[in-house]
Length: 232
Length: 199
Image 1 (cartoon, rainbow over the protein chains, first blue to last red):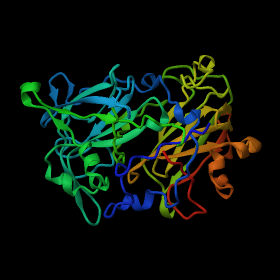
Image 2 (cartoon, chains in turn yellow, red; image 1 turned 90 degrees about the vertical axis):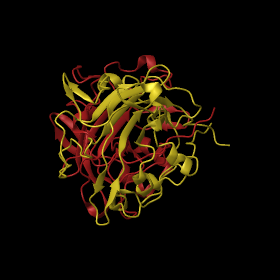
Image 3 (tube, helix red, strand yellow; image 1 turned 45 degrees about the vertical axis):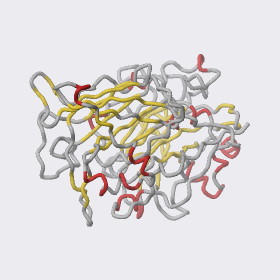
Image 4 (cartoon, rainbow over the protein chains, first blue to last red; image 1 turned 180 degrees about the vertical axis):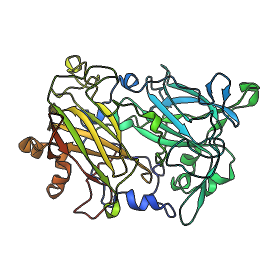
């Protein structure tokens, strides 16, 4: 028996390094990646990770009584799925983002944009039995990337997902539909396939489905699921 | 139904410090408050992450995953999962400081028999960081087991001249525990870059 990693379907993985994004030219390995076998270490992950990384912080928009973040209130909900479209239960989903002015609550972000005393900007939840997760937050602002040839990051939300195998670990970003900065973003545009880029853009829900308190978006995340199949 | 996997992106430079708790880089504890497992040799795994030019990678994130001291995982993929050490999580997360340094506390892992061959004791490391659009994965082996290492199917996927990059070095004693040093060079010439695996 021989177990190998399925290659990524074409067009989904970002093309690296990226022109105009200097960090990709100093961090991305130059040497080819090795094609190792899939063994038990790759097929497993901590099933009790939610004990180590406390989950349940799903409301980034309200820091405490009367402490509501500035910005457009939004609800992001979706499912974490495997490559067969089945919901993944018990996945740990981490989310972090800039505030409405496009500034992160992080010591490295020293840009001259206001911090919001009512917004930290990160949360962590565990998916339900059908793979569902949800967060309540605000729409983040855009911000410039301080490189020689400056570009602006469109509003985006970072997602990190820990699935049932270390091979299914995924870090990605979610974008908002219709933002003109999406087409100019060197990070989003590094994904070659237009459909794959489209799957990084949240689906807006009709306000009639959501109500008058906030806007709603759906964002499904598909983890590499057939992580170990015998080669053809 | 077939679903296409979601594209990877970088974690960017602003992965929240507030995501980290004190024991996150301690694989021997199942929660921050739990007593550490004592079923095995407690070790320190530490090193420095460098990028092109030997410059430290600041605020990079490393995630470690390994078997317990007897080579078992508390996971249905392990036929001996019921015997896995209940006090050992086997997973930890660390971030790199201004000099690119990280540290994990763990137990020396056990090897195990796999369908692909006998695995030498090892720790899998995932590396995430600004400028890394795709996560990197590598495997740490230990200098105690040269014969097992030479027969390991994952190490065997790497040309032998590059093996030394994947074997941690003895690094003295820290707090009464043996320490091992594993430095990572994300980008460099063939003789200096750390071997990484497809994921």
